[in-house]
Length: 191
Image (cartoon, rainbow, N blue to C red):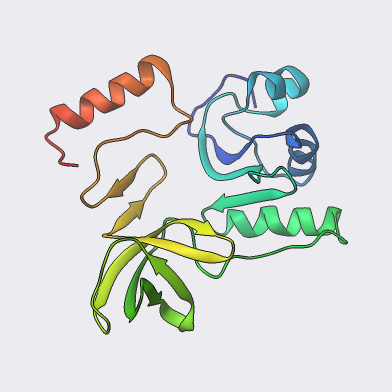
C-alpha cells in the first residue's frame, strides 16, 4: 500500500482523538485504513491509503467519551471484534437500529413509531396513529433512533435520499466536491 494511492482501496476511515491508536490496532489485524488524515499518513506512511473508499467510519462520540462505528457489514463486525479483543473491559453498546437504514414503521402516536423487531423510534413530522410509514434513521437521541420519512439508499460512493437536496459527504472537499455536485445537477438527478 502506498500513501496517496486510492486505486479501488476499500477499508476504514479513522478520525478523532484516538485515531493513532485505533489505526495501529486495525492495521495490526489486517484491516485497511483509507482516506487517512495528513497526521495518520505522516505517522504510518505506506501502511495506510490517503484516498480510497471508506466502507466504515470510526470516530469520536460528540462528548469524546467513546467511539462511534458506522458503515457496512461485515467490515463493521471485523472492526468491532478487533476493538473488543484489544479492549475487553470497555463497554460496548450496539444501537437498536442501523444508521441510514430504511424501515417500514408503524405509527404508535405522539411521533413514536415501531420498527421491525419492536424497536421504538421517533419520527420527525406528523403522522396518523396506525399509519405505515417508510422512513430512514438520520441520527440517535440517546439510544432512540430518530427517523425521517422517505427511502435512503447507501452505496460505496453515494447516499441517495428521497426528497432531499443534493449533498456530498463532509469528507469530500474542494474541487472534487464541486465536481460531484455539478455532475449530479447536470445528470438531472432530482433532490
